[in-house]
Length: 245
Image (cartoon, rainbow, N blue to C red; front, side):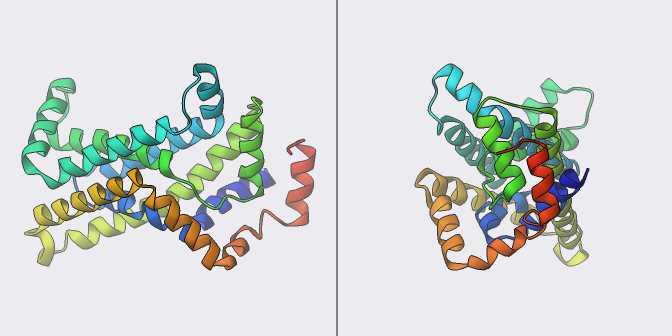
């Protein structure tokens, strides 16, 4: 329980790290669109992050795939959703496609939640935070092909910790954008966020996001202080009992 609690708190603290700045445009896209978009992004992020952390190495090895394949898929998904937000005609076509696949729900809700889930999946793929000892140990276990119940629980706890401030940022942003002074400009703001997502996706093609992360870590050594909970003696003893590397 101590390790799970620290993993959760570690996820919360990771959001404060400059390592996550390159993915903020993806997160900010949750402030526009349907009401279900923030929850969709959170659901997609948690699911993809947990699955990819625990099973990506095994799948890539079994199918003899390039480790960068998932990243390229995420990049093109991100580009597609950015264009959907930025170009009204594409957004209309997307809503029509969703209305045919989910006829029991309203188009606005479909676009919000389902579109959010797919954006969240993309976010889970490109999320490369400065992980602490617990998640680093879980990742090492996964790379060796050993996925235990503790590894799953710790990864889920970390993802939930990240999701809490993520959801707060998106809901706070939505409240800000829905003030009377901005209500008449929501369409324009949505196009701006879409353009930001497109720029971010293009940057991923050229590896700009990785370069920014590397630069921030090199320039801000204080990032190591965010893992102080995980580096405590009590946590280290529990990690040894779990027989994690």
